[in-house]
Length: 502
Image (cartoon, rainbow, N blue to C red):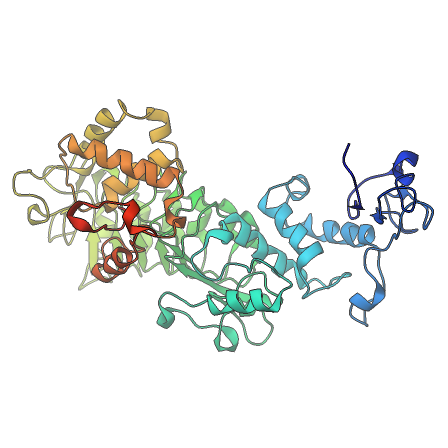
């Protein structure tokens, strides 16, 4: 039998009575020196536990721990108030399901966030949404700006804040000129990679480049009514693009490139009235390009390359009269480039760059003459491939690779977004520059090593993780310099050293 000395059961949904056998374990006859539950007079549900006869106390928060302008309020009353508001933002069942990003954000808000106290004003909804984003995108595994390990320890908070430095400081501007770690007791507008309107502290920009964001995109962002920029590049975020993002009427830049996003492109996205830039390239998107693309009247940049899109290019794309750059390569699109799109080429139109799978060997192929319509039709120039390998279309390469790798991994697993196998396949096809298609069978070993990397959460390794940018020599050099064995005698590297993985 356990020798219990301290037991805290507060802030739950327990009811009934504290068992007498537990009460009998109280000092001096027993070992329990501290015992509490939701036994306050205002708690609902409530545990009947007399003080001092059984429980030692029944108070969740003392009045002194709350701002003086707020009256004392029981935990259960606070929870009821918060749930009432947040149920208009998140599904109530999801909110109360343990382990979901929504539940974790709610728990943080109620139990660990010291910036607000109950009862809240409605500003806490934005803070909750940002916490949902943090947990949804695997915030604890981010390279920088992750929450401190101890949210109440000033030293831990200071260390986390010191680690909240943008990988490219020139790309970011913070309200107040600096960035705090996420979930720290400062206003969320001061958290790293976030920008707000100065006049009312409403979130306007969320920008992350190469910060190892994972998880999925939360639909709750739809409630950030003045969100103007959402840029989440070079991570491992998977799942679908929420169609609810089509309600972000102020959004002018949506960049989700180089992730593991699946599903179709929501047609609602094309209805965003201010959308100027849409970059969804280098993901696992499927389906067709909706005819609703013609509604994107402000669209200037459209990058959809390196996905699995099918069908034809809709004629309605010719309505995007402000379009300047469009890349549709490395998909499964076919048919002809609509003449109305070709007519948008410079000098009579605004398009300076236009390309698709229009090379002579591409199959399927988009008929798009160069220079009459497309500006180029090359996926990889022969000079970028080993001289012994002929040029081969992306789709033919994919078919060949799947044929071989299906003998190594389950084909369904290979094509299921977010699996280590799918991530390894995507890296091999889109980002690995060591091999070019067609491969010899040596690439199978390379694929297996990539599967191992993703299966063991390689992006979180202490050393030898892949560089943030697999095509940037400086980023590769930095990653290689970080690939040093913690105990050099335990490792032997070919040629006496080790390169970063991938």
